[in-house]
Every structure is written in C-alpha cells, then in structure tokens.
Length: 178
Image (cartoon, rainbow, N blue to C red; front, top):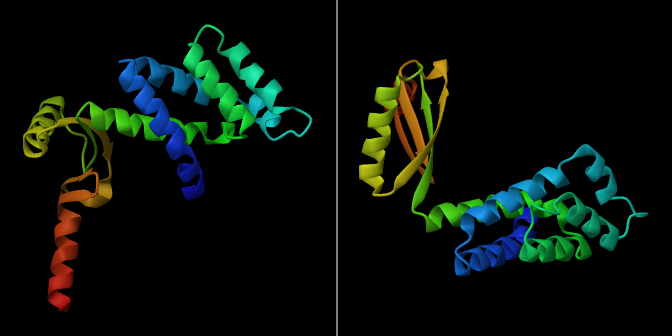
C-alpha cells in the first residue's frame, strides 16, 4: 500500500495543480472517481495485468469507456497511466487528490464514533463545536460502537478527542497501575 501511495503521489499532485489552475476541482473529482470505477470493474481488472493486452490497447479501452466523461486532459492522463503501467494506482491517485482538494477547500475529515446513535440536533451541535475549535469546515463520518459504553470519540487528522466511558476507564486503569 505504501508503495502504491508513493507512486501515485506525483500524479495526484500534478492533477491537483492542473485542476486548481483551471478552477476545475469538482470536475476532476468526478473524472478520477469514474476512472477508478473503470479500473475496479472485474472485466477490466482481468485486462490490466494481461500480457496479451498492450498499454496502448488498455489506454484506448479507458478512453472508449469514458468517452464523454473525460476531458482532453483526463484522456491524456489515462493514456499516460496506461503507458507507464500505473493504472493500478488510480484509487490512490483519487484518494490523494481528494485529500489535496479538501485541504484546498479548508475541509477536515472527522471520524465520530458514538456509543449510541446520535440525534441530528446533537450531531449538528457537535460538528458546529468542532468547526469552531478547528476553524475549518468539518466533514463527519459517524458510526456507532457500543463498546465505548457511553460518550463519543472523535478523530480529526492525527488528533483524537476521547470522551468515551471506555476511554476514561482505560485512563484510570493506567493511572492506578503507575
């Protein structure tokens, strides 16, 4: 995985710079997402590693499938990825591009885990409070984990805010052992 990310990074950064220069971030998001869908199709996966299928044929297949979905720059990218045998890193290119786009737009991704399902008012207030704290827009992914016993746990980037009962019990256990 780390190797694929390393290979994908220059492509993602180049696409991001191109998208910013042409003020076309949302369109590039759609084109990359569609390219990933093509690459993850079971029939296409069989062709990607097939030595009988040339890089040019694979690139042309992508162009044919995405005929009216790709602009000329995206078409060039698909051919370049096919020629360099990098089609397999399309998901990582898309992931890195979306991270750069979110950073550009001032959006932070947050993982909110709650012991119980949260009401929409509670969730909205929590997101508003997080946006005030981080001074950026928050895109929240919410899940429920009954093992937390009570409370919530929020992960934003490398920062973890643990206000769960389980977290407090673990902290107490560590304090008692020392």
